[in-house]
Length: 308
Ligand SMILES: [Zn+2]
Image 1 (cartoon, helix red, strand yellow):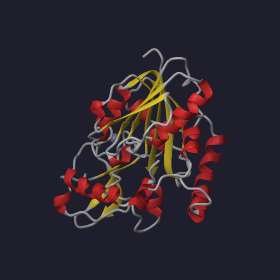
Image 2 (tube, rainbow, N blue to C red):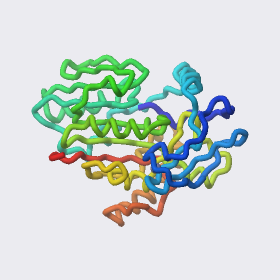
Image 3 (tube, protein in one colour):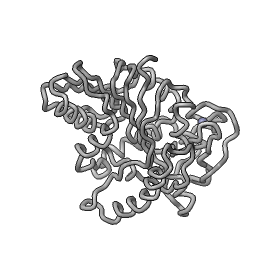
Image 4 (cartoon, rainbow, N blue to C red):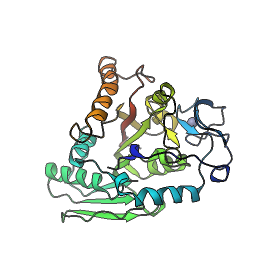
């Protein structure tokens, strides 16, 4: 798992960004959007909140060549490619609500923006420990090459673009990636078409705007992150995209660091997320707009209907 929250934002010039779009890049609604946070001045770039899908997106999207330069630097910096020390723990956390995932036939996993596919690989290993020899194929969509498989039952294939993948997936992962994609509407719609009936979908995104509004000069890490998708967005997601799916989990995301790696950051994250977990526990089923929003990140598990 890439620690994307450690990116640093940069000030962008007028030639780095495309003109502002009227439509919400997440749901394509053309309703006027409210400015909720200023990312930078000269040129002004703000985060705008969509009244339909409740996601926030940058008013101006970065151009492709700026992103190419930015990510070239990102990939060159090994410190920024820090991975979590425990992909196995994260994998168990992701699959815990997915009781229907094990089966006798070979499974197919799509890891969109999954780096070298380590999280999907750890998930596959965990599933095989439970269910035996069904065989698992993983397609990883990323600029990075996939890791080698150390298990004859697991195959990994790297794809540069979403259009290169096969489809008919049992599990689709989009962990800490949707916030990076300027034209994210097409990606979300494509991911939904690649799921087989009964498939699971896991997503994790930053939910930083409420925190950013409290703390002056908060770095939303633009142009890396161009969207902010929190509880009210994800609790409407199935409805917004008219998916034949149900939301199984919608909660503050897992804390990325451990006490040993980063004690202060880990404790701060725990303290911020705790009220959200308590709220969810006492107000089940979760309301569309939970009260506590200072959590930094959100995650969901959906399951597509079997008869769609
Ligand atoms: Zn929208």
